[in-house]
Image (cartoon, rainbow over all chains, first blue to last red; front, side):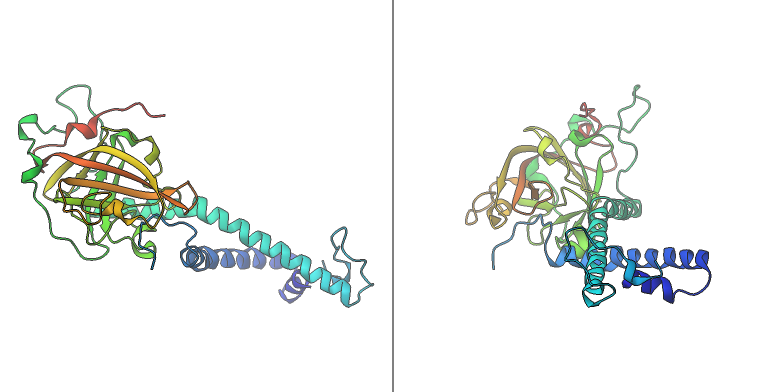
Length: 55
Length: 266
């Protein structure tokens, strides 16, 4: 399904596919760390240390 | 990996029809679960480790840009000739005469914070505002807008993370009554002493009132209040430490003896 599909669409011989796969994963992790996780953490108030009146 | 139909299914899954719709569906669900597990696992790595690295670098960088802040290795030297000069007791000014700076713009770093109980190398910037994205997640300690500035009659209230994002208030529970909390601004040193610690619910805003604990009372002293989350890794309650100003001194004549005090570290 997903994994075999990714493997199929990546071009070149196996070692090129592996290199491309590593780059792809690194890009995905970078996007998660830089934007997705900070957004999630702030939006859902996983950690909050301020006192504030309940609206 | 090249034959999709041979992707193994989990034990206990419904018996797949060979290469049929059910087989493909189970494969897809299994792969989605693997991806979900990796994404959630990476979130933990990001929150517990990566935020410390990034926020720690940012806070060190902020400290370097404050040319007035004392950021030398804060350790008492073995002989009097070495190490920083200490403010003589005669230069300790009474709290009533403390200078109070104007409240700065949002996200401006205006002070540094020293806590000998957390090690003589503990120095963190204090910036205006307590929003997470702009201040607490990057700059470290934040000052509640509208509460007193350092030395002011009222309550100098600050907030910071207790875990993750370089965790400025990580060891807040170790503070004992009488411990020094030292604030430096561009013009003055302020030495506070811990008077009280308590655990409250997040809506108990009276802890940052001008007179801590009483929203309606007029200020009757020069207080400092630290707030952070409690228990650790949770947002259910708040850990609060109050302190009161003991003395202040102008900058330029040395550092308070308090920040050189070596307290045995756990």
